[in-house]
Amino acid sequence: MRFAEQWNWCTVDATRDVTLGIREFRLRPDGGAAPYPPGSHLNVAVLIDGQPARRSYSLVGDRDPHTYRIAVRLAPDSRGGSRAMWNLKPGARIEISSPSSLLEIDWNRQNYCLIAGGIGITPITAIASALHRRNIDLHLHYAVKSRGDAAYLSELSSALGDRLIVHASDEGARLDLDLTFRALPSDAVAIMCGPMRMLETARRAWNDAGRAPADLRYETFGSSGLLPTAEFRVRLKDSGAELVVSPNSSMLDVLNDAGFEVMSDCQRGECGVCAVDVIAVDGAIDHRDVFFSEQQKKDNRKICPCVSRAVGIVTIDTLYRPEAA
Ligand SMILES: Cc1cc2nc3c(=O)[nH]c(=O)nc-3n(C[C@H](O)[C@H](O)[C@H](O)COP(=O)(O)OP(=O)(O)OC[C@H]3O[C@@H](n4cnc5c(N)ncnc54)[C@H](O)[C@@H]3O)c2cc1C
Image (cartoon, rainbow, N blue to C red; front, side, top):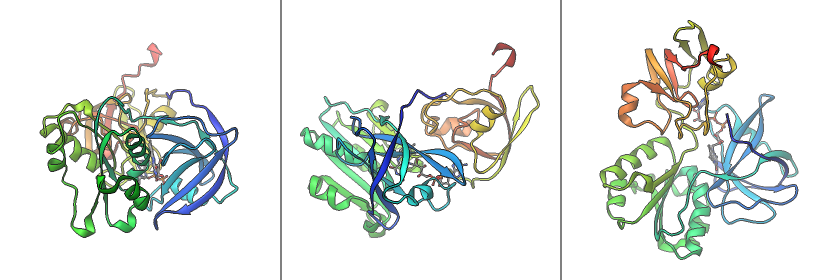
């Protein structure tokens, strides 16, 4: 289940490489660009091996009434969505959804700590710019492997000056979130976008610093997990059905395609709407969500089938009862 989205055609106006592995696309939607809050993303219809799929991309920088700007990292070990994007040339026609935001910004708060890991910088560029324009105090911590991998570095540096702190691991300047959070004023809000491991570190550090959980806001772009992405099996308690989840599909899609209806919303492992009960595990679960706590993941009593996977066989109860449907 997804909320209704509006789709529209657009033309790829221009592309440029902002780093060796990140390509920017300017998209010109038919009928102009819709207004959207900073931190928004849009969905793009892509063809992967001839099959329709969708991928989400955050809108970069300030709003423009005519075009949307997105930046796509070429994912090396992937199903092919980012490669399909990289194959687009200026003049290509693609379908996109209207923008929507998952990152809530409270304009009444006066101190923001922004944290970006790698490609997670994309929504943060727009948020930093909007906060800066409103004279809201902010620092942006940008964690990258090296400065050469940091998209939009010069843009951000000229806008933010010393409020931009780059943490390049090849310079030994790793981001210490414990230190960072402890040094923040008590009313600060943190907004982060980065890989799941970084988010888990941030959540722990935020809690350890005694801060209100709601003041840490985040978005992840999906996770590659801790175990390899391989085929696994799902057994359904009661029905005895056994389904195969291939490396290219999610457990949620396989369950729904087989008629075991599971409600879902974000499909990024953030909202927990799709969580189902785990009855037994023969192998291991690779929890790729950011919804459950570390302890809940260790307990293995529930799984978010939209993103999480397994190695071996996992027996679940979706609580779907056909007679009640
Ligand atoms: C709100 C939002 C905003 C985003 N913004 C951006 C952005 O600004 N820029 C950007 O580059 N990306 C962004 N993304 C990520 C983007 O939507 C795509 O996921 C990304 O381009 C990779 O797509 P892919 O098909 O190439 O890779 P995928 O196949 O989706 O692979 C991505 C990772 O998942 C692992 N994986 C492989 N197979 C599976 C599988 N079956 N199930 C689960 N995981 C698997 C891979 O190991 C890989 O590391 C955003 C995502 C979201 C949700």
